[in-house]
Image (cartoon, rainbow, N blue to C red; front, top):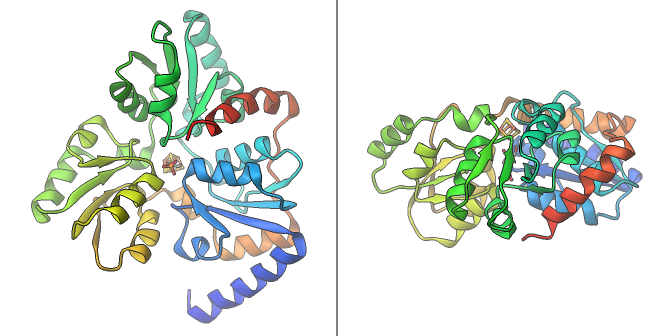
Length: 306
Ligand code: 13P
Ligand code: SF4
């Protein structure tokens, strides 16, 4: 898109935002031009926090469905919009509430921790929610004699279980985007850039995390790269993160580990859909009150663990 068209969209978005008393929240995996017009860009944890404390009437969520659902649960009096209703998370769809209930029945004393990348119905069946930024801390809070069920990301679950030194019952879910990166891909790019530090998201495979220099949520990856002084970094997460990283670190070379690191759902939100959403105040994301009430308990526990 050319610059003048982008500026036209921005003008319209700013006008509508004022008129609607709206706030725009965007995940780091969004398109650069969407990140640049957002009031706040962040990781899943930061975005849930912002939604919970916002005093706007309308929250426009530039992200995927489970994020907007969490915002609707945490801010029940606000109108939450997801500009592209079809923007889902394939990993969240790998966990079904009915199957989780069956697993709970087989493990009646287990504590259920669900990744925020889940449906509201799965959250409603969980004791705690977590994001990739506080999963280890939440495992550490649970009494050592209790079993833990972690749903749905087997990679994050395995990583957090090893860090917390806990046995965890893992759901067989994964993120298509992060799980596609193989250890061979990292070895190949490391051969090309032998001095680069490898910075990875915990949704990657265990064998990728084992050969990485730093593992953390998107916000933690940003912090690590900004606060350390190496010349080159190999970034192993969705390509959208390169936008804030390159803006904040113009002197550092930031290399995407693999071309496979694209989440198609995160790219569905465009400036024109954002304008339409603010104009029509649709699509609204709603969660039925009974589910929301139960899911809110798990989400509010998540927000307390920083
Ligand atoms: P974080 O931003 O919490 O690291 O999450 C990554 C992700 O895959 C969101 O869908
Ligand atoms: Fe889901 Fe992975 Fe896309 Fe995040 S990057 S929304 S976990 S598919």
